[in-house]
Length: 167
Image (cartoon, rainbow, N blue to C red; front, side):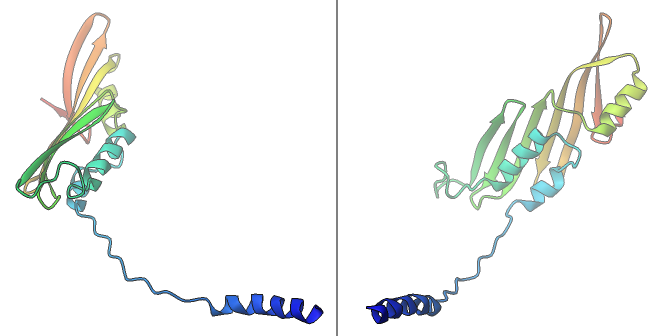
């Protein structure tokens, strides 16, 4: 009986040494919309902006419910409470154009410092961040529209992403 138990124990240990080694095929990961992300990305932008832009870049058009072979262009809308993006894709899933609008997001440091410096005593009541992207032209618009308040007065200003006041 001891020999049988010892034999089964040794057999159990040796069976594991003959496990198969399986080689899987190489997988190539390609970022289809890296150009869009590189153009619109602002390192100091609010997290909600970066989140929605990554969602647009990662959207898999061909495996979505909207894809049909007969269409050349697709218009897909992406929404979060702080903003929205209307994106145009070609039939391969590449981003052609976007129109983006975000409301009341955290302003980048450069924009906030510029506004505080030039308009001291005013408070920021509302803001909107607007971005337009085109695949051939790159980013054609990146600006902040800001509503300032002081006592009962209101003023609207525009800045670019670097904090330069636009007239």
